Amino acid sequence: MLKVLLDSWREGLEKISLTKLQVEMLGKSLTESKMNVDSLLDDNKVIVEIDNLDLANNFLKEAEKIGVNCKLILDDD
Image (cartoon, rainbow, N blue to C red; front, side, top):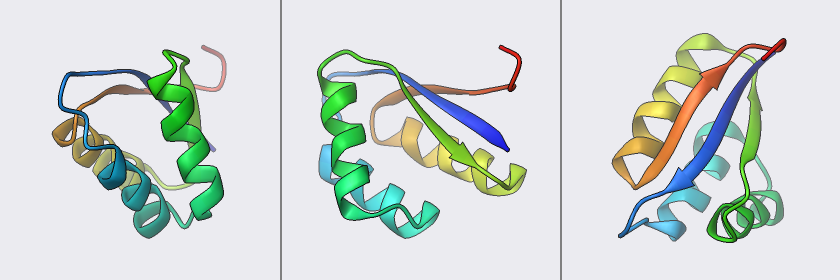
């Protein structure tokens, strides 16, 4: 299982787009996705587990576009 660390956010973060991205791309529930966004906005780091490298890389790219500072992490990090 791969993990994506949502580390912080930049000015202009598209929070609705981030919620939708998690629901549509990762299949997360709306509740979980909104909790992740709210946690990130409260300056907490959020870890999202993704089981496919291509999907993880696509998620990273899209999240960066909408204002999230994120990176792929290994299980032992």
